[in-house]
Amino acid sequence: MTKTARINTMMRYINNRQYFTIHELMTQFQVSRSTVIRDLNSIQELGMPLTASVGRDGGYAVMQNQLLPAVQFNSEELKALFVSFLATLNTQLPYLQNRNTLTEKLVAIASQTQQDDLLTLQELLVFSHTNPANTRLTELTDFAPAMLKTLLNTCLTSRQLQLTLAAGTQTVWVRHVFNRQDNWVVDAWDLSNQQFCEIKIADIQQVRPVSREQTLDVAAITAAIKAARPAPNVIIKLNAPAIQQFRQHPHPTTPLQFLDPFQQTARLECFLDVHQPQQVTDFSHWFLYLGSDAQLTAAPTELTTAIRQEARGIIDQLP
Image (cartoon, rainbow, N blue to C red):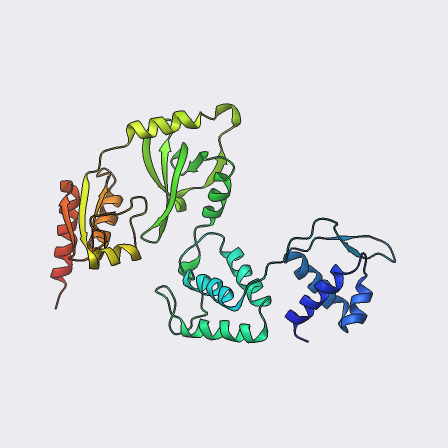
C-alpha cells in the first residue's frame, strides 16, 4: 500500500472511531510507530483535528464538530490547480513555502493514475519563467524578499503601518503591493507628509502596525488620497500586438481602456513621478518592451529623453 493510499484509509478508519491508539494503527496497517506518528501529522495537516490523551493507555480522538468537510476534485480540476502552481513557479510570489506544501498535498490526494498524469504535465509544460532543461527546478529568482510575507500578513491586520528603513521610520497607508522589474514595491500614501510614495520591500527592515490610539480614520485617508491624486501625464495608444505584450507584463496599478468592441486598440493613461529616476528608468524599459505598436502620445520630457537614450544605446550596440 502506498503512503497516499494508507493515509486515506487511515483517515476513514479514524473517522469511524471515537478513540484509537498508536498501537491499534500499527497493528491495523502493519507499520512502525514512527510511521504512524508521521502519518498522523500528515492527517492533521490535511485538516482533521486530533486530540491526544497522556498516560500508559493514552491515545487519540477526533475533536467533535471540528472535522473539516472533505474536499474532492475531479481529474480536470486537479490538473487545473496543478498547472496553476506550475505557471507561477519562479515568479517571486509570497507564501512560497506554503505553495510548495499545497502542491505536495494536491499530489497526495490524487490517485496513482492522476499522479502520473500530473507528473507528465510537469514534464510537458514550459512557462515563461520555467527552466526548460529541468521543469522541476526552482530558480533562485523564485525567492521573494523575506519581508514580503511579513508585510502582507501585517496589512491583513492594519494597512496603516510604520516602516523602518535605513534612513528612518515612515508612517504610511499601503495602497498596493506589486512586482515591477523583478522588484517587489509598496505603493503607499505617506501619512506624515501627505504624499504618494513608492518603497522597495527589499529596503524595509521592520514592519509594525500603527498603534490603535494613533490610527487615522480610513475615510479621511481615502479622501486625502483622492484629492491629491495627480492627473495622468503619460498617455500610450496600443494596437493589438502591444496589447498582447501588455497582458504579459501589465502596468501594476493602471488598467487599459479599450477603444473598440473587439479589444484591438486601447489607451493607457497613468501618472509618472519624474522626480523618481528609478521609476522613469523602469517605465522606459517597460515601454520599449511593448514594441513599436505602442505609441506614446503624451509624456513628460524626462521620460522621452530616457527612452531615446535607451533606444540609442541599443542601436549603438548593433553589429
